[in-house]
Image (tube, rainbow, N blue to C red):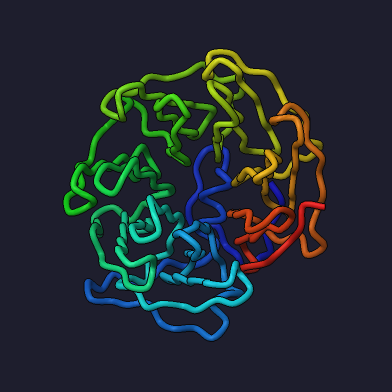
Length: 322
């Protein structure tokens, strides 16, 4: 993990000072007023933005102080929209061009049904100020929000109601959740834990892990093929759904935070210190480059054959794969 400057104080750490929570807590969270709304900031696109997603042709990014920004020109320009929270938002996910969810501190869950222009508050828990760290939906009704200390929320009505469940006797941070092509769900968690569900998220079991440090992201690269990545540049690859793993040499010790796949099959993984890794062989090997500003990268989208849109400590930026 790259070191952060003194003003970016860490508010939320545990055990290995998990990098995702470190980035998620770089800045203070908002107030707890029930009727709070985000404030429009002229430089919001340059603020801490932790995730980015596609809503049809629109891009949506979320981050500090409840900032939600949308772009209708592939990331060239951004417009901030007003939302009913100032809590820091950590992740965003869309099932289609209209329906999306954003999650963050205070167990906040926001929902949009118009592609990110307007948002409603679906869930908030002021009793627990721990952050939700990721959100995933199968369709417009069935989804999960996961986060710190084993927080696991599920809905089967599009988020009108959320049920809190315990999936493990432990309380490890659940950092990322995604689906494999076969329908299985997998989660990357703290202290090397990897969880899998084969029944749409009702029951979870633990997969063998090749590393005892925290995982921050996991992605499918093919049928039963997975890469998982996290603290200090560690990455492993599985070709049997996570039963066995092989180490991948990333050439970096920067913690890895997010990934995407280009139309030509190129896999891109980004991380702290401005790290960008690319693979042309389905994740077996990677080439590394470091952006000149070395600012933490926490989200990525591919917007054309060679171009990528990035979110992170420096806000929104553009880069190329070549």
